[in-house]
Image 1 (tube, one colour):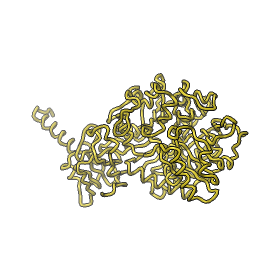
Image 2: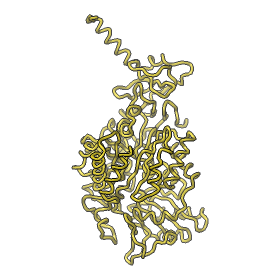
Image 3: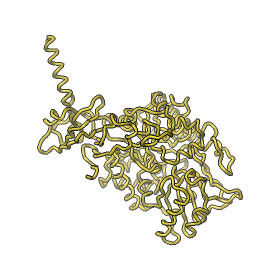
Length: 575
């Protein structure tokens, strides 16, 4: 049949009406089980008033409040948004929930604390401990203390208890004399491969351990029990829900309580229904680690509906702080007192390239995603090289291996990520007022700090860029801190000081990292990351519209509701 102009106009108007009403592509077979209405629903191309969700947790329709009201029944849960905004749920692709929960129960030290404040806090912890009981916790920063600390500073307030504190990065630890004695560390103890025992002018251990040397003490510290680990994890999961994190990647299973124990705890919270979010587990691997190989081989015993242990974590280097352990292409700007080795000048690459290429190729063949810790530009290059080796050996797949942190990336390496199908994972939470930045600036110098976390260049190079908080290395898991600092490159709230203004991105791009980009990286872009019919209803309700408020107020955004699969799993307490 041939349409007349008037009929064509009528048909066009009808289609527009259906689209605006949210019925252009309805899904599901039933009425709305949940209706969010009277707000700003941010879909891919437009802002609507309402979103309807069916009983299976699938988005039925997005459109006007009046039209979607037709999907309502007496059983529908109707939420009046009162003008609040609805966004896709946020994904944190690099977080440490077990560590975050355990730290809350340890001798926790506020980041940026000076020596006197640290000593006062340790003394308080000792007063509550039994004689000889280990005191563990953190976090300390050399820049805040004013120098690299030593064991005598802890001996002064804890002469009878072994004390072992990790720094903000988690890559260096500080022990007192009792802890060193318990670990058997003396002047004759040799540095382990990939680690450093700091020593004074007489060759005596100062109490500072770097990288794998941390394990010399850790093996003597009583590990948290399964019950303690589970309680810590459950607290952390609820904390993350309050910030709208609906999916995440535990970036280093085994970091706090051991790989087998932590994997079992993750399985137990999933079986109990306590795990509401969609979680990917990265199982920590190192060459020659038999426990890691065993857990990786038996990984599917831990798989559950919302739990996917399909990722392997590989530490390629350390951190570009006072430790100088991040692997850099060029020499560090400063020096390390008492050290004149290659690591002090260019950092440490912890896995030789041939061994790394073989391991990544093997994991890729097994269908496992590989996440690298790679802070220095030399480590980033090594990770990209290993991914390229895997692609050449196995061909391309849906796996999105990622180079994590990417504090520094050589310009000539930016294009490689797109070519080999890798993702750049950046840590925009590692920002002022986090004191770790003072250490980084001092270590690399003011020129290189201008390109720290080069988000703008990564996006322009066509790479897939995703965000990771690295909490509890940072004080808060709140993703809105990252959204603001990605846009402003300043302290939250605004500041004269900034890191790399040229690397700023837009609000839309920043939110896209947490939603559609992260979903793509996790292999769930067909289900998550956008608000449109047919997608799963992983949503957050926030108190302000991030697209219209001043950029330096984005970190103040509050999550009012967190919704996963159509279930409201968190609501902010009423005033």
